[in-house]
Image 1 (cartoon, helix red, strand yellow):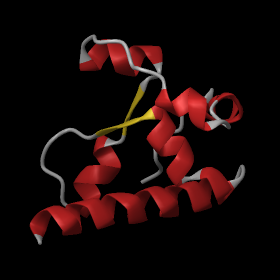
Image 2 (tube, rainbow, N blue to C red):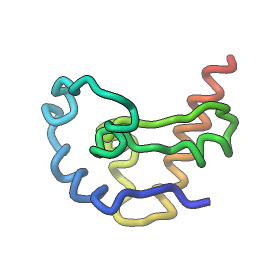
Image 3 (cartoon, one colour):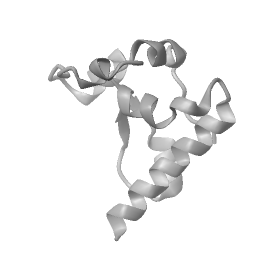
Image 4 (cartoon, rainbow, N blue to C red):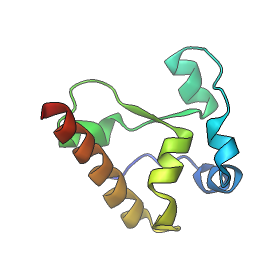
Length: 94
């Protein structure tokens, strides 16, 4: 299964190139609104593949920073995201 990659993902990567962009305070609002606004990226389908039972979303900056060297290659992005999620679920089970 391919990760849901927002169409604006690569432009967001350029915007968040500096640490300041990822360290700003996030506004407080609902998860649904944050996903709609692009502040959170829903990765639930891939998270379920590696063992998460609940919905999982990553902040835009966490996604960008963890997949930064993937370039425009969708396969690299998917593999990196799966590895990140697998590491997280493994750590939670330990």
